Image (tube, rainbow, N blue to C red; front, side, top):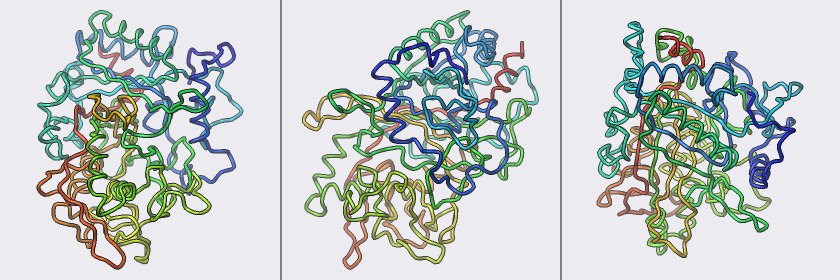
Length: 524
């Protein structure tokens, strides 16, 4: 990938140098470190045809999402073509999954001898809803257009909201303006390495959207890595507003372009995230020029009730230490150390290396491990959204794989860092980003409906009947419950809490390949 910021011709700002260095320290891997078994084998992926954020984590400190309505369809299709023309002097280009390792650690397939001549200061991606495909007049011009394996995408996020727990305050009628009413056609996502780059490319995009009335901007929302002060300077962190270190658990993709830390789990097949002919549970969208190498993503914006969460922790201190309760709810201590490795302290003797933070199992093939959840509760957040070897709904044997339901998450906080000395500041805080998968039904919706919001997801392990994910589940205070097993005593039961997250927006998007965007642009 070649971007306009020349590596050798521009002095980087202190913000940019510090943020880039932090990303390397936290997430970088040397070429001698272990890569998960099988991560670099599998089918050859056409990285130049696949949108980059499907397979690569950009690790840039800020993002802006634009929600667009199609204005003049012909002009909108024409802009699609310009976005993938390869001419960056004309317009910013859609970022692909090709090698772009300058400034970041290379992946297993990147050619270290072919160093890119410029360093990316932005990444650009695009998703289309089903109403968006109709508004672009693709269906009119391509009668053979078919998404027959993807009914959820065609129905849209608003129609499927109740299925995933988006009810009450999270219902579509309460979403921010523009989402869920049928005019939410296109989502354009701009990541940037510096505030200057964000401003520059945002201005370019706004002018392009308005050119010829191609698109009308209905909404835009910004995310930014939470900052903390180090050596007198503000630097980005990898934390969320609830105080937990984020981005530790990664979904390993067989044949993917990134390096992965050690992990007990088997790599996921690439067709779970990139639409391919050899997939086991769907038929490629037709025509192939549109379907092949695409993907699907659920865009979501959720508000986090940080004050309510912290008050909840303190209100139960007569039953359990607040920080231990925070760890039990999540499955990790707030610094990222998993309960599976250190159930009693967030600072185990000898420490926990970053490479080991995701290298653990809940239940082994012989049934050993932590099947009852004494170390990490079975109902804890990270154990629900990624049960690993726990026998659960959709995967019924100890030590088995739940890979067919895995999701790739690309998200970032919005709103300022929470200040506990000023809890009632009236400022909204939350998370926004994408859940990427090839089947919204079998991955995103399955996880939300079966694992997050169902008390019977764990099969033989009987949870309280109204038990749901304590952090992101849809709760009713009159019936909410979270059980914390103990080795020799009855479980600690925490009750009477509300939902700590509220959906503010959602959209089901198709992530077209570069080929698909060119195809659409040539429809006339």
